[in-house]
Image 1 (tube, rainbow, N blue to C red):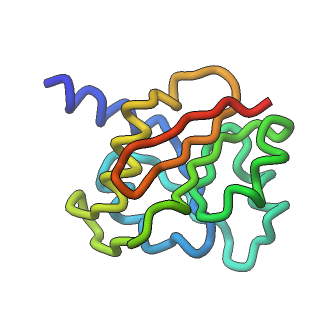
Image 2: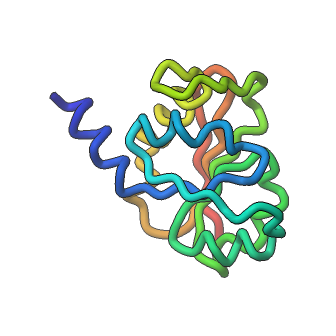
Length: 130
């Protein structure tokens, strides 16, 4: 029962996908996240402005970390995940690692702006951005 309650809370956590991660959209939505796809060709500055109040999922956190606190968004970095699974459902291993880290870190309930770095083994590191 606890797991289903936790999964339903993820629906309130909105993830904006960096352009090269579009293949993760169906599996993230299937896992209960609200996923926003930026318009094709949107530059990093436009993506940052669009992400206000949300989290950007990216493999390039260094491009976004500097403005996160000022523009009010969180970052989920998956640079350390070696294989990006493209399965469109909950069996997607990449999404399982991301989902587990988001749920265990409770990033969606914390005040402030954070960088959640998800490792290849599913562990994570949470860092507050100031």
